[in-house]
Amino acid sequence: MTEQRKQNSGSPGKGTSRRNRRSNGAGAPGGTASGKPSGGKPRTPSARELAMDILTRIETEHSYSNLLLNQSLQKHELERQEAGLVTELVYGTIQRMNTIDYFLDRFVAKGVAKLQPWVRALLRLSFYQLYYLDRIPVHAAVNEAVNIAKRRGHQGISGMVNGVLRNVHRSMDTLTLPADLPAVRRIALEHSHPEWMVARWAAQYGEEEAAKLAASNNAAPHVSVRANANRLSRAELLAQLEREGVSARPSVVAPAGVVIENAGNMAHSPWFRQGLLTMQDESSMLVAEVVDPQPGMSVLDCCAAPGGKTTHLAEKMSDRGKITANDVHPHKEALVAEQASRLGLSSIRTAVGDAKELAGRFAPGSFDRILLDAPCSGLGVIRRKPDAKWTKRESEIGEIADLQYDILRSVAGLLRKDGVLVYSTCTIEPEENEKQVQRFLSEHPDYQLDTELDSLVPRAVLEKARLSEGMLQILPQHFHTDGFFIARLRKIR
Image 1 (cartoon, one colour):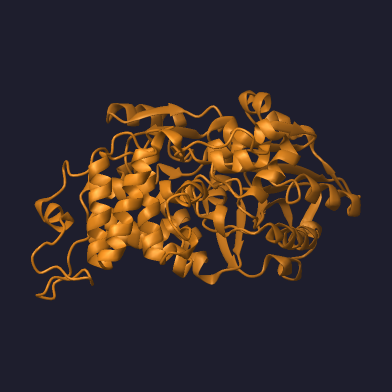
Image 2: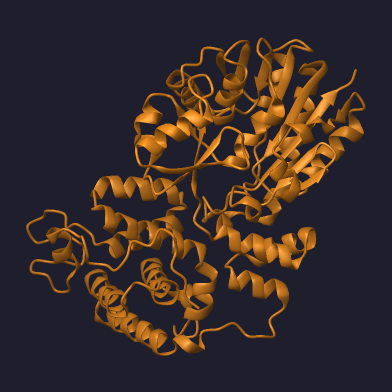
């Protein structure tokens, strides 16, 4: 029934500052319902209270969980263990939300949906601790939830919160899913995903694979980085990391990839500052491998920001040639330029504009290679963005597919004869992937799928991922990476 998640920060209270411990108690002198002591100085929120505030804002303001979480942690400067607990509670509660609501509805008189948003968030994160985390003491989870309810609400709310959570604890052994649930409903509740999403995956990949996919989405992502080949080899980077006591291993998915264990935020590391590595998912690293640009080539990256694949292309070209890195958002142009500068790459030229209009800015046949890493539903990266499960709508997939096709069709004429166009997405939806490519080929007889893709990715990938002629689909459960689709097309005339 329970599981201890990878990022679990341990029992609350240990390692917290005296200031934070004082702020956790009920009835602290001078406390008010607004969260400010009577003197007017803001009170430091506890980990659970901050998690509740973040979850409430995500729901009511439609904020992105990763951005809001980072902003909140920076603002309040919690100690590492407390910050870890906030992160665990926010992501874990979002990941398991519909399962949590399914069980909580048994104990909330009018149902969870009728509660005030902050009360709903408080009950959700408290249930998450009781049901999913092994190392959180029951009294810590329940007592602080009641204390928060007293500070933020009134006696009636705190009494309801206390009653619900104590009933949950007493009924823990009965909180199981009915054995006769239909398969899609069972998978959706067992692994906490919207039913429409599970139904699509079951139809596309089968029920067993859909269950594995959903389970994988709830696993904590690992950290992977790409060695900057212009400055050092992967083996040299691994040796440096080992000398500094960092646990790392070579990726079996990506030739330039390194998987890091328990090293903190690599963006704060000297290797990052010195431009020796880039943080990137292993599946994403395969895109530049399939593009296979050669030194001296002219390359177009249609939707380049934030620049991970763009800079990988430049590294593979030994920074010799020209890469035009285009993105529709002006404020993201700087992200690509910053990454190129940090890595010491001079072959990248940034541009801003709608990718559908690139054909009006360049002559036909201008490029040897084109990468279209297309905007997509992002259903391959749910483990990194768990709130996407609940904000995405099934109707969006068709709308996004139309946009993808408009871009693909518009840039096709910019490739020279015998050139290569790589189409990639971070989704697992055939409508955005295989079907998109098949439609393009049916309307563009001057293109064909390029089976050379097989020789450009590691054998381990070919053995496990879903492979068809010139197309590769990696599912999250294959390698504990992002789900990614890559197709390699060649212009034959």
